[in-house]
Amino acid sequence: MVKPTEMIWAFLLKVLVPCALHSQVADQPQVDPVLPQLYVVTVEGQSGFIDREGKVVIEATFDKAYPFSDGLAAVQKDGAWGFIDTKGRMVIEPQFVMVGMFSDSLASFRAKKFTDKWGYIDKTGKVVIRPQFDCAENFRKGIAKVGFETLESKLLGTITDIGVTCDSRFINRDGKFVPEPSPTHYATGKPGELIPFRKNDMAGYLDAKGQVVIEPQFQAASAFSNGLARVCKGGFFGYIDGSGELVIPARFKYANDFSEGLAGVYLGEKGWGFIDRTGREVIPAKYGWVYSGFRHGIANVAHEGKSGYIDTKGEWVWRPTE
Image (cartoon, one colour):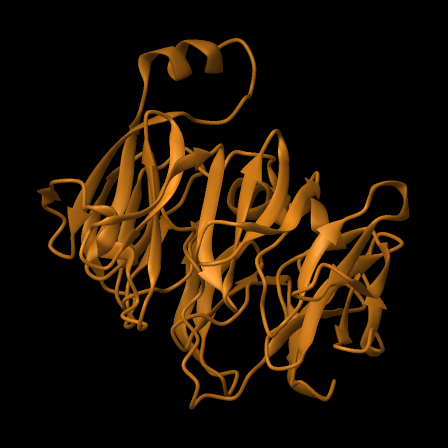
């Protein structure tokens, strides 16, 4: 499994930084329900994949690996990234210095150097949008957020390494610039769905027709999941129902969205644990990290600096490894 220090940037930006959810909806890996559900593990320093019973189904022969998304998983061999299918077959040979995850059948990549621009490939490895961007996010419904580094970021980068800050644009699958989509672009089509949006630097919710249902009042707001949405108020996270009422008070410094009826939350010195939809702690807080939510009955957690998987009772499916 990719070590916590190597995945922390994605986790912090998307689910952990208090009150920093400025995107309308955080991208989630697209999982095809007809494909086998596989999970990244590390065995003696090499990455492979297990099924939900903890059985190794793709041998740990890769330097690093990312979770499956859109039917393919990024894997690293000898410092170069490529992609495998769920049978472990290499469908795009390792050749890139950096890659994103597939979504809408496209994935971002940097070719040879970490300073190269980002572009996009299709599932055959063919470059379909030439490298030209300093920032590149996943496609969703035919549109991706990209960006170009700001002058301030470039100047600061000559002094210290603080990452890249970009001015954002949006492109379609042809690589052409398009207007920023409205929040309703991120709707999934679920009946009664509410979509986060921002106005005057506060977050609220729209329905699929674009009508305001919950007025902007939160510092941050995520999409609804299992009937509840994670919001930030007063610098802490809690959960609201469809009326906008805080049914689980905003008392968590860090928190994840609900998934399969449980949500990972940070409970101070005790560490991370899981609560149910009433806010009750059902899996004791003893983990150093919770990577994301439950998926098909198991969740990826860190314990004593190592990564493993637990079931909904808190029992180990795969005991922590590096």
